Length: 116
Length: 111
Image (cartoon, rainbow over all chains, first blue to last red; front, side, top):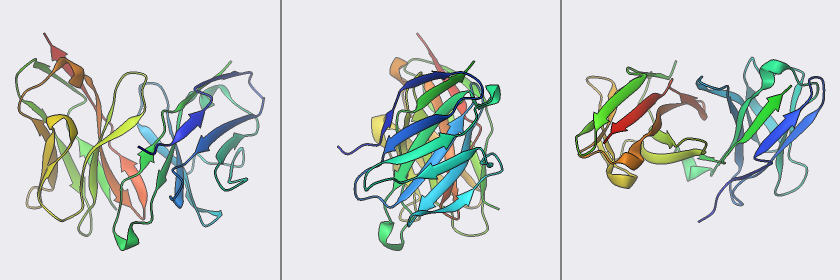
């Protein structure tokens, strides 16, 4: 069964360092997402990406964040200068176009980012 | 605006008894609704989805949910809880193709 894969599963970084979280969406999907879940809190939308550009982003997704689809398979989230409050589980998701029907998002297993 | 409210942050049931996890939605038009489950230290797995084809939706692992427009609800049920059902459950709505998560309900299953 196709699945969204994320690497690494855990990342520890020092405050102020740059991190790149990687995702391989399901191959025929065209919509991509990043969400985050701070420990004990709700799952929050960060950004959606379609047709090689950001389609929507949240207030959380400030200038420190960027996304990229560097090739035909990877989808990355970069945090330029990490802060302690960026510590969270980050989920990548992808969705098929659905041919006009709304379809479900498929989520990866997540990357747990710890900023120290 | 489309959103969801999960009415219980924690639910405890005994193994073998029914499960009811409540979700109310708000939507200016016919919503698309989902239930996802997150087991400890795991990712988010789709349990079931409602996209207006049928009001009673069957999902995986014996879960089902009923869409009730008059009550703006989409409650998740299971006739008999199993220990492996212990997890966090999220009701999810769609807004402009963005998935909006409820605050989650942590289900505890007692032996």
